[in-house]
Image 1 (cartoon, rainbow, N blue to C red):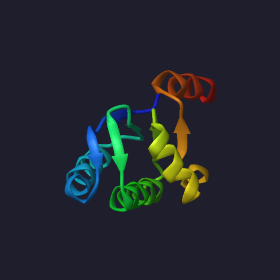
Image 2: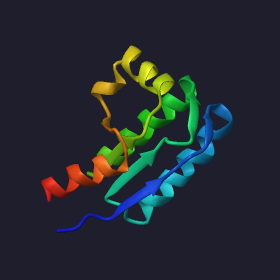
Image 3: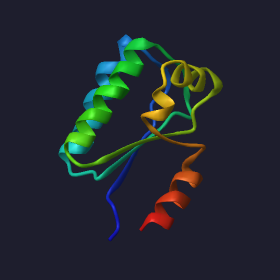
Image 4: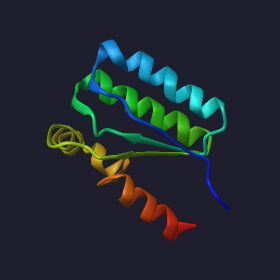
Amino acid sequence: MSSNVQVIQPTGILDSTKAEEFRESVETLLQEGAEVILVDLTDITFVDSSGLGTLVVLLKKARGLNRSFCICSINDQVRMLFELTSMDRVFEIYENRQAFENAKLTVS
C-alpha cells in the first residue's frame, strides 16, 4: 500500500506572520486526502513560539484524522527549540528527505 505523501516546504521565518498561511496550506493538503504530510524545513531559518504552536496544532489535526505529520531537515536553532520544549519526542523528525523516504520504504 503506497501512502499519499505530500511535501510542504515553507521558507524564511515561521512566526506569527506566516503561521496562519502555513496552517491553511497544510489543512488544505489534509482535506485533499494526504495521508502523510512531510514538512521540509530546509529553507526555514527561525521558528518562534507561534510557529511551534502551529506545528503542534497541525500534528494534532493530522493525528485526529489518522494521518502522519513528519518533519525533516531542521537547522540547529529549530533543533534546539524542539529539544528545549521536548517537541523532539513528540514529532517524527528525519535528518532529510532521503532519511524520511528510507524510513517509509522499510515500514511499507
